[in-house]
Length: 273
Image (cartoon, rainbow, N blue to C red; front, top):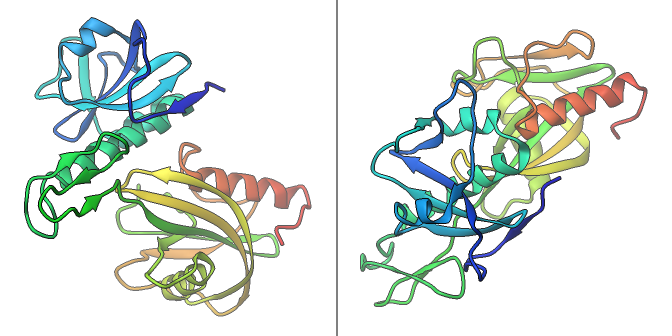
């Protein structure tokens, strides 16, 4: 797997080629091709068009930068970030997600949230500071849980109104102040579908730029309750046998990995407890 070395300050000397993770009006730039493609740029080509770029680090010896542009350059097109992430290899996909969150943080904190003074970038860390009241704004992350509820050889999947037609996923929700992730799992599952769970087992995590989440994924065993979808939040929910699943998210998201890997373990007779 490609090795990424994060940094906030450029490494010297600059690499001859760079990865540019650029956005135009909130959409991500990819090569003008039928498929989703990125290609490294020669340093002079990048430097001439990105005066306010954010350094991200190095990927296999190439500097990585995030920036915004006024218009699509020749040979490039702007696509929704989610579409780009689905088409890119894993290292570039996650760097695109990182770039999107850095760009949005910088855009949203040009002025101090406490006193309204224009903020300034800090040299030693990824932060913007207010020169008047000294408040510091760091890139924001919102922890969120995802839970695949199971019982016997069935899993509980649901869909929200905004999902792609026919696609179901695991349950998810944001952690509230003063709440542990485990408490969030129990609360969100009860709120969204009306069932109780126990025996949580941690699966993994993923940084998710929609809008700025850290997804923490679990499996959880059903212990009681009948499915009652939460009005306005859950359009449809149900138990699905592991050999008769509906459409599920692709593997670019942690939901796709969680469901597929858990179902594979259940088919192999391995316990999720």
